[in-house]
Image 1 (cartoon, helix red, strand yellow):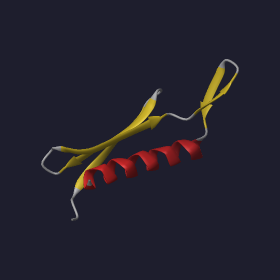
Image 2 (cartoon, helix red, strand yellow):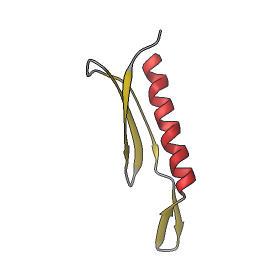
Image 3 (tube, rainbow, N blue to C red):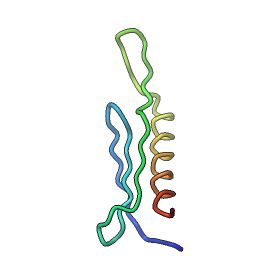
Image 4 (cartoon, rainbow, N blue to C red):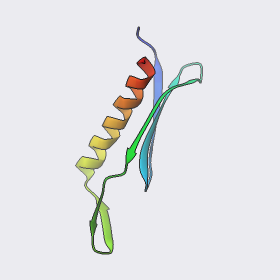
Length: 68
């Protein structure tokens, strides 16, 4: 069954979270993964390609849980 929904994403310092919400406002799916930081001694940064890939993966997982 096809369901219309909206996906919201929070890219935080600890994790990337996605929430899939039906058009009626009900939460129908969610997912999260750790934010992929690169560490070099006391410094940290994020590879933009890996960050974007993690966002896409979390959104896909949230959408998949909505279909379950």
